[in-house]
Image 1 (spheres, helix red, strand yellow):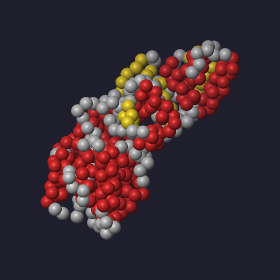
Image 2 (cartoon, rainbow, N blue to C red):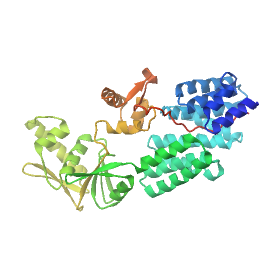
Image 3 (cartoon, one colour):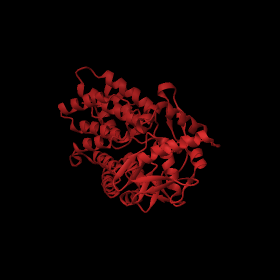
Image 4 (spheres, rainbow, N blue to C red):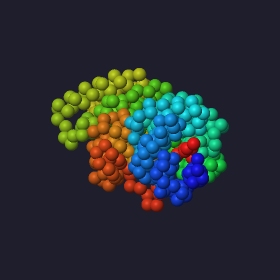
Length: 406
């Protein structure tokens, strides 16, 4: 490895992409292309980074398997930052196997961290946890320990174990300070802001209250009857009934829960569930059918009783009914929640993450774009969506630092 490549790699490890580019910007040999790709990724130009890394992988000869594998790992991280969640995971796994076989345990571990982060992003928390359990963070330098603890904190937050999440973020903070990489420190700070920001709204008896994640954990562990509008489930005493694939039923149970202990008029339920301003007898007949289905779905924990003017929710044992909603009740709030991470997403990645159809997501994005809440760039399959960026900030990206080239 020549002195300029070594100096550029050290600059990238310290989070100084401009310093790296000063040394190798005019070089087109394979090691320089790889390091230039990482530098461009750290600067936020993910499209250019992807092109450079692919060029580097092609420039390395067939006998340079380790170098090619390292390029694949870097490409996978760029894809993750671009929210291209459909990138070939088999290629990353093959690269990890090659790196382990040749003794490059650091980059092999980084490949596993990328797999864990992808699992976490698409909601496969169990897989993320299993992947993370195969790695011993104490054996790695501070940058890798920071990544490890960030993933651990993400898992704990999704498990609603907030004390464990705070402990993981405290360890991540210490490791990021030791690493002295600004992008790592920024990511830890972002995770802390997320943990300390309102996570949901509590709606009960006509009143609303913003809740932190700690408060949500306490609420779900209580004896309250909870209609969870964040996950489209109904919870009570350890029983969880999912209505995620039955949106009309969930709309009805939420309306009943918000009015509890009072009832809700039939015409109001028709308007909310079927989105109709005027209701005739056929709509009321359909409402009776849907209420029958809701009564059957909730049978283990509640009943739905008909009243003179409408319907009322009757929990079997709970003395309190609470609706747990998103912090901001806006249209397409779930899509906005994912875009709020500041990264660029494809509609296919959002559909995969949300567990819904791509066309449904595309319609939501078009509606949000018309309201100037999101913006897009690129065309066709390369089109990406994000919230308007804050001026003066580039995309932060965790990358293997440095990408060693023998």
